[in-house]
Image (cartoon, rainbow, N blue to C red; front, side, top):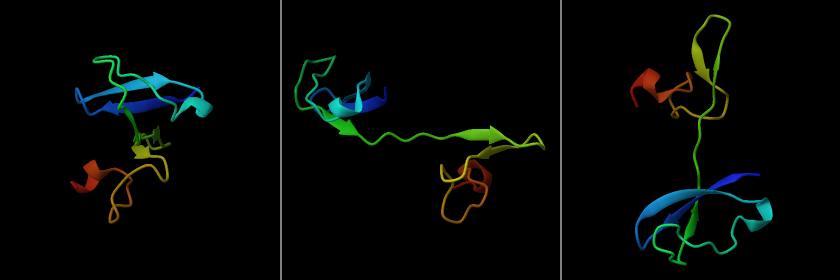
Length: 78
């Protein structure tokens, strides 16, 4: 079951909720203020792996900036 991230503009909190795909955009109440104007957010994540040389690298397609081939913005300071 996927973990979705939601934002409540009334109390300005972000919270996560495990829900089936079919319930992703179904109405949900804010756990803090019980508000109903909650919006699903686009969640971002990163995935890293350790290569045979011991270096940590981002898995292809998960990060980096347009000019960085390392996949890690920490590498090029962007």
